[in-house]
Length: 317
Image (cartoon, rainbow, N blue to C red):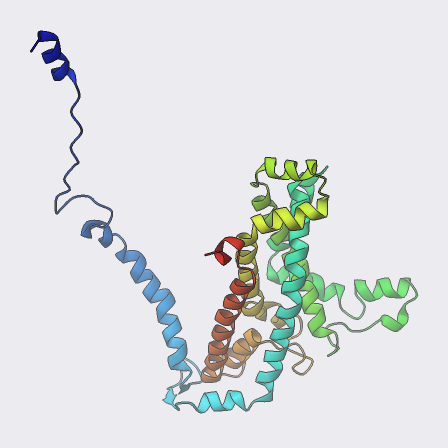
């Protein structure tokens, strides 16, 4: 064997040996790392699982508040709710609110968001204007629309100025217009906010895909609905779920400020009924039964939205 071959063999790098991970190594799934998740698990158990379990427990009690002694009544509260016409009025109003707000808000917000993503002239100003209603506190929003929709407010004043006195109505005090007025306010608050979120997502789409569609002769509407929409369908689904939950669970604040569920029960929703029974009528058991109904509707609605807006990639699996 020559000296050259010996040197070449010595200089040849040896294959790297795989590292051996000891029992106490710093792996991702080691016991030491798992212990770091304990604080978050405790937080989740105390502030998420705990209140959820308490809701089911309180639903079986007759309880007027923290200063009173509760008594176990079993399913008596459930029977009371199921035989109460106010509950069915609230259920109908909540279903109507969701059925109008979601189908109107999501497509409109998507179109506005797509327009913003194309960066038209003054798009930064438009983004601020769209985003502003969502930044206004609910109390200020209530004050604004209490003045706008009052009998001598802005809407009726404009109708009188246009000679449409027959359309003048107390919008928040009329059973026929109280809930539609609240729905209109929900749309005013949510459309612009959601449009800006859509614009941020649409801005990340590959420019070459959109440009190729334009070269092929696709118009703006076709690009928006047949190219951009399928590419962000998962994001559309997420925002639709969030807006559904927001509409279903948080309508109580605006109703409390403007109509207090009236006239009669014409604007009472399930979330407002939870508040009214718990704090105004001191019937915590009834309120938590309605809370359980809200939970069931929330989960069922999210599953339905997930099924309806399932992406093409998930359908092929």
